Amino acid sequence: MPDDITLLTVPVFSTLCNAAFALRREVFVIEQQIPESEEFDADDLTATHLVAIAAGNVVGTLRIIDAPEHAKLGRVVVAKAWRGKGISTRMLERAMDIARRRGQSRFHLTAQHDKLGVYEKLGFVAYGEPFDDGSGILHLRMKTY
Image (cartoon, rainbow, N blue to C red; front, side):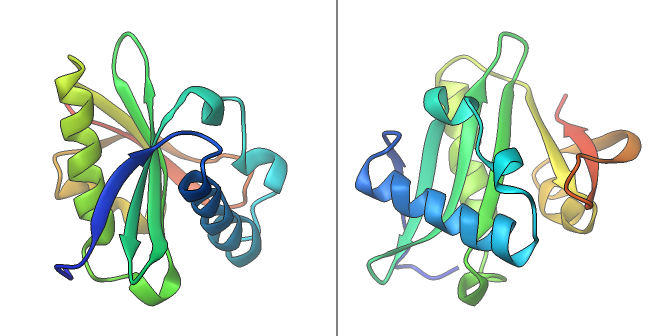
């Protein structure tokens, strides 16, 4: 993991959050061809947005949605040039720390089937059957206990 990565929570529609939305559009909508109408939703308005900054740019992002029964982590993305450097793991660890400080002890997410290992290293366990969330990409539900 590069030492010069900064992780910040940012307000929705701030300059850094808008850069995070642009990264999500680049990866999910353009690269993975997920419909934009499925990528952005009302949860973005109330979620906590976390960004990873390197070399002056947003190179990763995720969001935390607080629910009574768990914190839902989602929209985890890292820019193509920065993948494989541990950024998503570091962002997930920070997001879980943020949620724990808010009183959460359980976490939930849906993971693209080829990304399960990232989450398993953090204690997530897959459950249920694989499903297509409408994007054409198989996902699995995952949670911590």
